[in-house]
Amino acid sequence: MALTPERSLERIRSDLTHEVAHFEAEHDPSEAWTDESGRCGGTTKEQEIEAAELAGAILIPHESAKRAAMRGIDATAIALRYQVSLEMAEWRMRMSGGYEIRRHSQSKRV
Image (cartoon, rainbow, N blue to C red; front, side, top):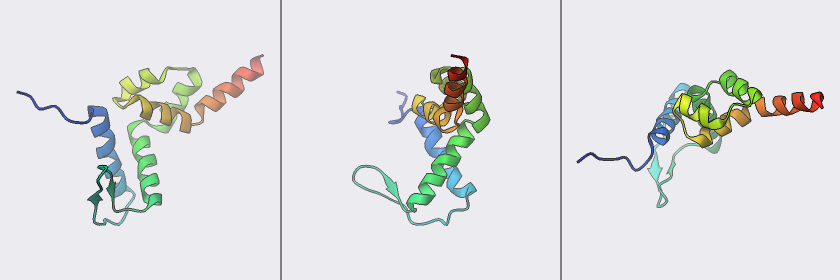
């Protein structure tokens, strides 16, 4: 019988990349713990935000997310291409500024 993870492969990939991002950002290691809800702690809010943003950039490069948003490519296609969750693809495309560039460009055509 095969064991299946509690989390999707996309979520596992994101979690691992987030932890690598802490290392890459040279965050000081600290004692981690898991609370009753399953969330981990041990770093500052600023370090968590920095690791989340760096992990996103590792998983979907900024320029790729930006171009996809500017071209109106569906986030599902980006999620499949980079093997990430739909939420990660949407977040990266939104944070890239590509949607705003697309909206601005379309408003000039009207």
